[in-house]
Structures are given as C-alpha cells and as structure tokens.
Length: 111
Image (cartoon, rainbow, N blue to C red):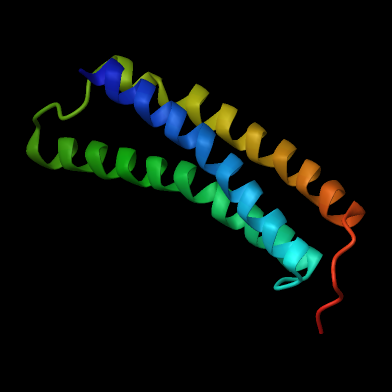
C-alpha cells in the first residue's frame, strides 16, 4: 500500500504546479496581477506540495521515534529524496518558464 500512496503523491506533487501555472498565467493575462508578483506566487504555491510532503514525513518519523512503532516502511522513507529532488527541479524549471512566458505576454498594466 505504501507504494501506491507514494505513486499517488508523486503525481499529485507533479501536477499541482502545472495547474498553478495555468491559473497564474490567466491572472496575468487578465491584468489582475503583475508579472513579477505572479511569478513569485507561482513559485510559492508550487513549492507547497513538496514542503507539505516533507512535513508529513518528518511528523511520521518523529511519531515513530516517540512510540517505537514503525509507521512508515523503509522503502517509503527512501522515496523521499528522489521525490523531493524531482519536484524541486520541476518547480525551478517551471518558474523559469513562467517568468519567460509572463514577460512575453501583452497584459494590461496594473498599478
């Protein structure tokens, strides 16, 4: 079951930044947000799933230390490093792509 949960979390962590990308581009096009602010918010919103995953992992490991009962398997714990590394690389690349795309958009100037 841990493998299924890890696979589900992987896709969730990978797809959330794509949805945030589309939402922020739409806001820049409408002129409801400035390009720089939208880029910063895109980065922040896209990092949240990875940070939440790390926080849950640390919470489970801490609870395991306190209760002396294994709450997560060793394989699931080893999945943390590649999952977080891939998600951070994805967010950095998408932030770069978002910044370039937003700078090329003709959007109404908001003040």
